[in-house]
Image (cartoon, rainbow, N blue to C red; front, side, top):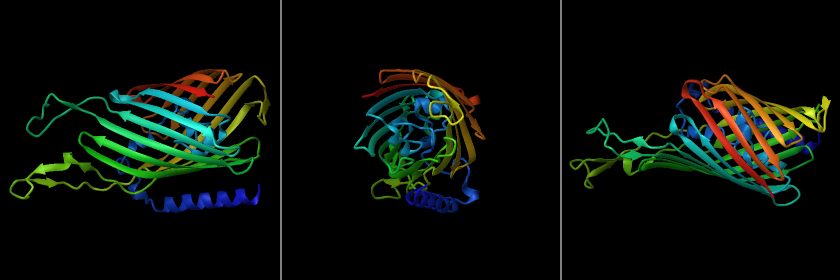
Amino acid sequence: MNKRCKIFIIIFFSLASLIAQDVPVEVTKVATSAANWLKIETGTRAIGMGGSQVASGRGVTAVPYNPACLAYLDQSETFFSKSYFIAGISHNTLAYGTRLGSTDYFGLHLFFLDSGPIGETTEMEPDGTGRDYHVYDLALRLTYSKILTDRLRIGGTVKYIREQIYNTYMQTFALDIGSNFDTGIYGFILGMSISNFGPDVQFHGEGLNTAADDLSPSGTLNKVTQKFALPLMIRLGIQNDILGSKSAFLKSDLHRLTFSIDGINSIDYSVFGAAGLEYSWSEIAFLRLGTHMGHDTAGISSGFGVAYGGFSVDFAYVNYGILDETLQFGITLEF
């Protein structure tokens, strides 16, 4: 390992430790942060592998997990996915990544979530007004990644975040950073990332106005909501090709079996894990299996895909227990 690699790894772990120290144990609880939809798994391959992508992610679909994974692109790539999530919620992803040179990469990643219609109720009409509203969530990511050495990739993302509930909204900017390091030890690859590093947020908008003719010259009072932190997440994972042309264990030019496992620490949740397998036949047909460890709802996930001539179609399934099952399909084009 050269000197630059060692310095980078020391700096990364030091930064992760400092951030973790600022998150006391007593606040690592559910519903103590805003924009929790940022933790929803995206990318059809990722979902099929249980979300274990910080080390095994490849290309633009892995940007939400680790921006350094963008630096695995061989050529330009576009990706679109549609997910049928729980409780009538749906979310879509549109992404593009490309090489800027021999070692530099750039990507755009758009995530959009729609709650579906929600019946409006008021104090005067608790049974409903007959009108519907929607909750819309959006994250637009701009990512730059770079190959520093033949074994180390790094990346960073600046993202615009917006959440709108009827006529109130929240918006802010946040940062993600990550690295991907080939250890050189039996083919193991180490991935690390920090996501959603940004300021505390609060809601604004007309929906917070209350009629108060006797208290305000304008006839309204503007409510001020409490500020909440974004769901800061630290991921650490490993990946290995147990079987394949690059495997240190079982060599095969036709078959590949990749194993990955991630540990995830979130500001508003206890530490949990994700593990996944991907089998590939000739890099044309793919089968995937994943699981979530220590998660309160997500369980087994699975998926499959077909790729040919730079075009691929993938499907994924996740069982969220009492919250129902979810499906996603994705299309990738390399050119």
